[in-house]
Amino acid sequence: MSTDTAGSRTRETVGPAVGGATLDAVATRTTAHAPVLWTIAIASFVADGVLTVYGIRLGLTEVNPVAADLIADVGALPALALLKGVALTVAVAGWFVMPEDYRGLVPAGLALPWVVASLLNCVAVGLVL
Image (cartoon, rainbow, N blue to C red):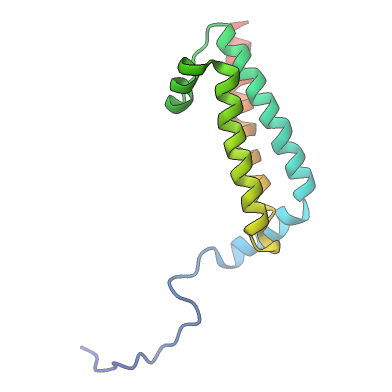
């Protein structure tokens, strides 16, 4: 048992460090390519929406339960516009409040899932056709 109540180890930050050098490297890289990442995010945003609507018209179903419920209530196009609009709004707000060195993580965070969703939609639509 220790009797050191003064805390001989000092910390400059509160809580554990998150990411460290790895996060800094990824953030630097994504921020350097932010315009390209925004382009990819917006293109995949549109592709995912168009392919989802087209897939639903072909008889496919939405696997995201939140999106599926909203699509059932208001229709595919309004539901997707609302969901993607909210995601884009949060991302743009995040862009403005994040430290400049980390801003590239925002479009990367949008682009990654939307590119994957677009590719999966391409496969699903291709299998139906």
